[in-house]
Every structure is written in structure tokens, then in C-alpha cells.
Length: 206
Image (cartoon, rainbow, N blue to C red; front, side):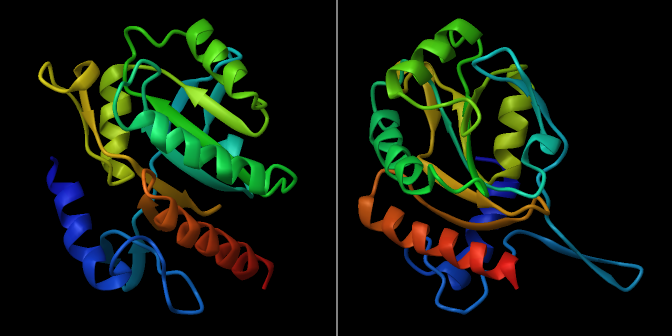
């Protein structure tokens, strides 16, 4: 587990409590905070460029003016991924008609999860590309950006399917700030997370 992920866990224990629900009226911006020339600089998701199930390039600009929900998975995962995807589908169904909310799933199995394989996976879930992007790319870039989402992801021959990763689901605002997270394997945690999504949408309207 990277130092960034460990630091995030320490910082968010006091903020998030158990699960992902925030009790304050406005969601906090999670992650490290720096002071540069007297200005407060919050953690941001860095620039990225991955390819999705329809062979479209997906970048930060894809989510301009959007709230997005992110996770990390692989299509042949025999352990937590089916549980997480079940909960992601709940959220997809809830926000399907809301153009302000989109979904981004990063495959950590860049060797096997080709574009056609991701396309088949998305088709089997019966979701649309404009709403939910399943992306692949350079392995090192995927693993590096997982740290920026405060997600542990790594190759591990001893783990089910050959990869070790968490089931964390992350909420990112239009400014690329991480605003909430939850355990994607736990329906109750996801229920609270959706309350946080709603809270962020209200915040962005004001």
C-alpha cells in the first residue's frame, strides 16, 4: 500500500468516521492540503488519458462540469468486483436520468481487459457509454492514478485472479477533488454514499 493511500486513511478517519457518510452540510475536500504562496491547494486527480469500451479517449475533459463516481476492477475478478458492480449498477439506475453524474471504472488487468472485452462487459451490464466508461491503458499509469484516488491496487500472484485491490468507490467533483468514498461491497455504505452524491449536487447548484 502506497504512502499516499496510508496518509489518506489517517486523514479521513476523523472526517468520515465509519463508511463514507459526511454529517456536515457541505462535503469536505479529502486528501493532502498544501499552502503555496499563501494559497490553500487541495489534492486533485491528475491529468489522465485512457481508452474506453468504444475506443474513445477518456480524459479529465470528458468529465468537465460533471460529478463522477470512480472505481477499480477487472472483468475476470472472482472476488469483490461482482459485489461492487452490483452496487455501482444501483447507483447507475438511480442517476441514469441525471446528466450531471457519470461513472468511470478503471481496469487493473491491462493484459486481458482489451477494448472488445470491456465492450462485452458493458453490454452485459446493459449500460451506455455516455454514462459509464470502462477504461484501460498503460498498466503503470492505471496503478499510479489508483493512488491518487486513494485506492490500493497491485499485481499479486497470490490474490484471487492475480490482482489485489480494494472495493472502494470514490466521488469526484468537477474541480477534480475527491469529496467522498465508500465500501462498494457494502450496500449500507453505498446508501450513505448516494446521500453524499445528492449533497454534492445540491452544493454545486448553490
